[in-house]
Each structure stands twice: as structure tokens, then as C-alpha cells.
Image (cartoon, rainbow, N blue to C red; front, side):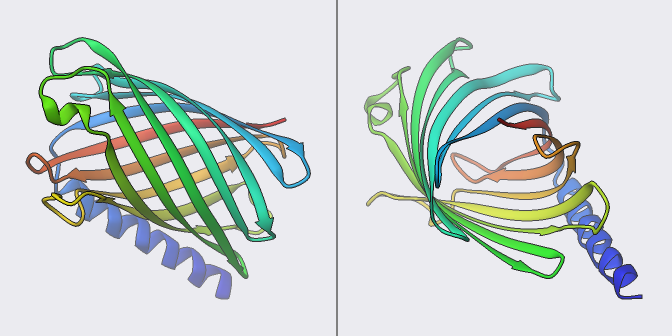
Length: 225
């Protein structure tokens, strides 16, 4: 009975999120990702990833990027990380231009029975190379706050999860305290200890320069080596 109640709660949360998100249908995209993790030495991990993101009903590529970083486990459930991302971005002149972005993360997890709660605080800074006006020369800095809950179904390879994230600009002339948010419902499938897949539905809202919503299906493959 307890197991059935947990499954019903997770299903209810997924359906609630989907019904709210799809009511804000504006655009649709598919994101394709691949990532890899490798333990270099004790407590230090190398992280690599690549991603292609589409928009306009998945008919055009919005951006493609490669990312590399390091994660250091401070204690059992707390880690810090730093990474760099090189992006080819489809800019306003209908041409792809490079963008550079770096991240610093503080991540923590809290396992509670079959549930795992995690949080991440990320400081990021983005640099554009396609300059249309003087403001484009100024790096855009954000603090991002993400919460996630994963339900580890006993003796079953599929694990559903929910997450929410907000983007807070860091500048003296910011127009909003939050200029983007994301809500995600997904499942991860552990094929083996080294290979896993994940599928997500994400609703994203950008508030600037005007409100723009996008519904995203994200597909990923993860490797540990």
C-alpha cells in the first residue's frame, strides 16, 4: 500500500506539471544531449558534455555546444564544480556565432528513503562575440537556483524526477529579479552502472525582452568511464 501511494503521488505531480505547462504553448523544441563522467583521482571527477538544441517547432537549430569541467566532492553529499562551455549560437542576423560561458556550482544531495532531494546554486557568466550594440560587450551574469526530487523505484531501472530552476540576473541595472524559469518532469533509465538514458519534458519561460514560452523534449545519454 505504501509503495502504491508513492507511485500515485509521483504520477499526480507529473500530470499536474504537464497540464500547467502545455497551457502556455508558444514554441516547441527538442534537445539532444550526451555526457560523460570520469573519476580522475579520489574525489575529483572530469565532466564532458555536448548538446544540440532546436526551436521553431524543432525545425531549426538554436544552438550547439561542448562543455568540459571538474567536480570535487567536498564531503559525501556536497560538491563544488567549475566548467566552461563553447557554443555556436543562431544569432539575430541568422548566422551562427560563438559564445563563451563559464560556471561555478555548489551542489548538495539529501537521500530520504526511496527519494533523493538535491539542490544546486550556479554562478554563470556569458560572453557574446556577435556585437550589435555596446550592451552586447558586457558579459551577462546570472545566479541560478535549482531544486530536484528523484524517486528511486526499488528493483526497477526507471526513476522519475521533477525539478525547478530560476535564473536571477546579477547587475545593478537589472529589470527583473528573475528573468527565466524552468520546470522539468523526467525519467532516467539505468541500463547498466556505466550507461544510462534520460528523457524530459521541460517548460521554459523567458521574461525579457518580452515573455516567450517554449516546451522542450530533452533526450540524453550518459556514460561513466
